[in-house]
Length: 258
Length: 289
Image (cartoon, rainbow over the protein chains, first blue to last red):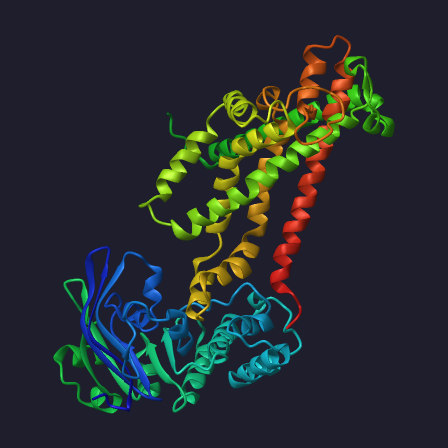
């Protein structure tokens, strides 16, 4: 029986690249509408695991997955699954803002159009709402026809967030969304992520423990043993930060390791 | 080599290097200038509107080059119609579906690189045996154009593949993460973003095709009358230049004038291709929202 509170669940997930084991035996649970922060040192497979949740690893033929991932109780690793529909439900924001080489406006209307929103007025309306949601509308409303590459890094990352939100995903995967941004832009994006709590289930990979403390409802700590990443500990943010069960987590959170 | 550590000595070496670089660059520009100046000196007096629209007379010593110009454009048209779809499709296959160093891709690349090194006269013999004789197309514009298509394919594919690979992988990742299928990403993002690079490949291919003589001697022939159809024989500009320069005493100035037309044609086509590519790229930033 699946817990209705659990939106996304990975069981005994292992990832291999070209035969080499990269991540082993991960069991991860993300609660519906909550923010799960995935923390840990570099090279412990946080981003690798994150990309599995919307099957982006399919793009890499050398990548091989074992185990199970369930979204609302439905297995998403089974062959024959409509991957494009899955990716519409589970959006991903990359580490570096990757706006498409289109105008600011078309960055949002382009995916909508190809997902079957036929009327231009509807697309424009949805795009406007998404831009308002990320607080970008006032900044860009007079230059929607300009290339998105003209925006600053922080603005581009918010545009990417708007582009993901315009498709109304149930889950958002954020892979260190602030790591390429300056502190001010980073704070804006962080506020935005916090504002999505309750509406969207969020998994955020971050190196910034202070950010994880501020944002997360739940925390998963990844670690690395002999070059293979694994999940060391997970639980509610309060519990993990206040009284970690594992010595490794305690040392990592105290800044003594990692 | 003796070491020279003093600041003065370093300055002398730097200046000498800079001078050498300038000298070599000047030499290159000088060579191009010399060729163009020579062509202009010999050909310009012969060049006129009548030269472009009249039929050649007296084995090319008098008259114009109308049938030759038309044959050339027809041969080029057949060549591009044959090579661009196949070239682009293969480049997409190599760049989008065979990015790694395993599978079928490396074999295709190796075959193309080998083909690129084959002398054009060999392509001419192949075209003659295959298109003219086996397929029964005879000495025709179709035979010549298709032979040229085979010849420019390796160049076209490799440069187009490079252009497609230069499109950042993030764009493909971004479209995939939005749940968009690969063909949407390819048609609406990758191809337009690669347009300037694709145009460079096209320009290189067109340049090579227009310059080709040897492969055409055996395939499209060198009859200098106006072709009735694609199955008729026709003489290309490069073949005309070769014939006037080598076989027709007193044809040198006509050859220079024809060469000027050829150079102008290449420049014109290059400019048009560049313009079209910029327009395609510009379509990405269409102001419609």
